Image 1: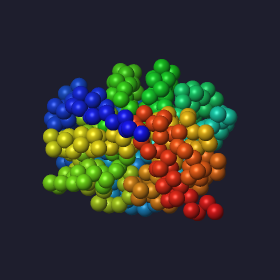
Image 2: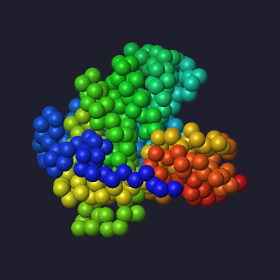
Image 3: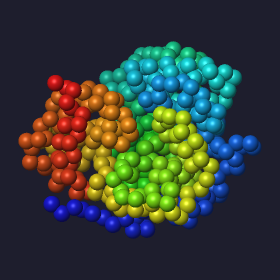
Image 4: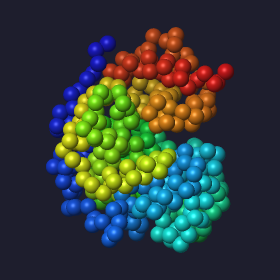
Length: 396
């Protein structure tokens, strides 16, 4: 099969990324230069829409972090927002964040806690209220600045009336200050459009990179016009930089460049990064404190070109053509966590939770209609077989 390779010319790269190279190099945006640095600190802060909250340009992604001291060090470096979830590590992650909140003492007053939960089709108002109370208990705090509906995949997930009614009641009680949503699936753009039209969401926490979601920059502009704050994550477009020979030659840092790229967009308030060691705190605070260079912009363009046919966007197009019902997007996402994010154990546990019929166990004997359905010409079946061999050995 001939790949549907689309060269990433300058115009396409800008459309995918949503920022002109001039903006990328100077760090200026639609609303002028980034906010001035706080006196005596390198970290800068932006408004989270019209919530009244100011958030650091780089914020702390707590997923997988079991060391409260790590978050305290991030706070010392200027990060004033953390994102976690009630379901991560069966609640232990929120408990670790709670320990860190107690350690930062009075600085909690200026700190933004973001958490949330996944709500299925049958979720009730009481289920939403219970999720809020459980998070407050584990975090050891009396309020959650932003509580999110997590992993939205379709507009129906966005318009979950019972859940939103419960979150509104929690807000009236002062337990939740603002309601947000979070997503990273193929249908994200439709979800964001639906949420903007709905009018009840005040913040988005979403996947955003320079390869996927070609219309996202325009959607973020529309969100900003409605006063919705935007925080982005997974800016590294799969984190497969090791597969591109000499990509970081000359001392360039791909992770830093992707953060800088995201911050060229004035409609982005903060970039959420998963912090798992103390060295990453310095890496990402340095990225927030300096503009994207021309060399870094060229590096990102090269990565986009070479990964065009090799990077799963989790769009679900091929999944709709799978005769076995394999959860293609989820399997590929878990494989990415294993190979590129250093989350081997988490990836295997997530794969193990999939119903057997949704795993890639059947792909070995399949002719691979998913390959022909991929709009980017990827060898989907081969990757699914490799993912199953990597992730599925513990299923028994």
